[in-house]
Length: 129
Image (cartoon, rainbow, N blue to C red; front, side, top):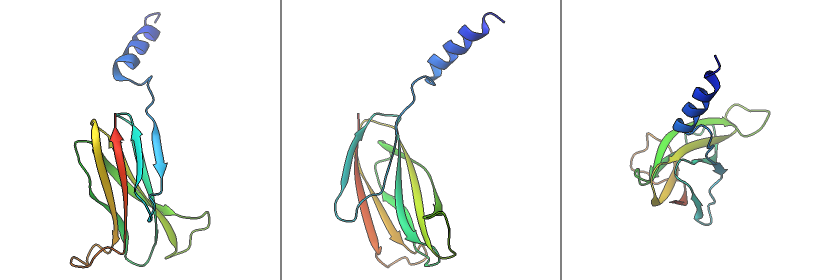
C-alpha cells in the first residue's frame, strides 16, 4: 500500500494528466476572420447561434485534419428559458493535433439543400505551436 502513491504519480506523469491543456471557446464573427495561436493538445470550441425549427444547422466544412481534429458537435438552448423553435447555440469542438496553420470554415445551411449556398459563413484561423 505504501507504493500506491508513487505508482499513481508515475502513471499520471507518463499519461500527461498533470498537464491540463487549455480549452478555448468563442463565437466566430461574421465581419472578420478570428485568429488565435494555441499549443498542440488544446481544445477549441466554436459557439455558433442559429434558430431551431428553421432546418438550418452549422457544419465545419473545411479544415486541415493534420492540424485540427473534429471531435463532435452538440446543440443547446441560447437562454435559460428555451423556446421550441427558438434561439440555439451549436458547439463544434476540435482538438489541436499537429503543428501548423489551418482555416476552419463554418457554414449555416439546410443539410438536404445540396445546391444552395450557405446563408451564413464564418471562419477562424488556427495556428498550432
